[in-house]
Image 1 (cartoon, rainbow, N blue to C red):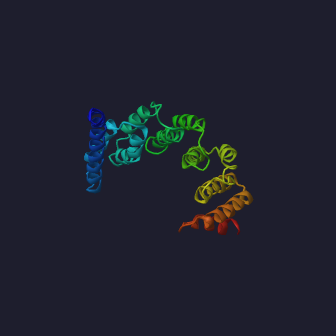
Image 2: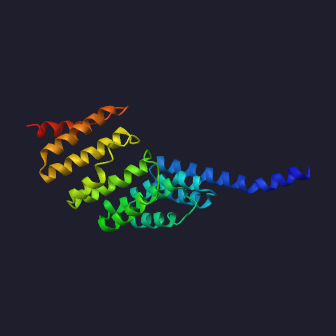
Image 3: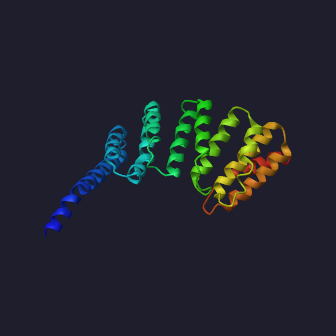
Length: 225
């Protein structure tokens, strides 16, 4: 009997956590659905603070990021991501996800390409499976920075080996191939641009769901003239 009472007392804090975390995330989801994004962020932030594991925290981080973006709180999001990157309990994939997002908010809303590249270089040093989308995202963002800076040779050097990776999803191979086609076209190399557009189309047709590969078709038509 004493053993059962001790077990019950030990489980009380966990039960309280589970109830509070679950209720807060449920309230956050309800506020999100009602498009009350400020209230939703408040609830999810409170749930995040109560989380007692990396899995519990990371489960709601994508929603928190979306809410920060919807509320246009870029500075607050940057601070939040920086804080989360200090947490050693996260897996390599989770850490790379956080670095990718930290870079992403500099590539688009803030357009600080130099710092974004520093963050992506850090992300590249974190080993993850090539089949994981975080691996693709790091290089895709690097490619976007090289494209905007018209550093096409760097783009080609880093991205050309990727579409052929067997671990890559065909939709990701399509996106990288199109980025390479655009880079070669900007360099004036229509032959290579056409070849990469054709590869992109082949990858696009392999995507197992309805997928828009019309850009590759348009490129092929224009470059074949």
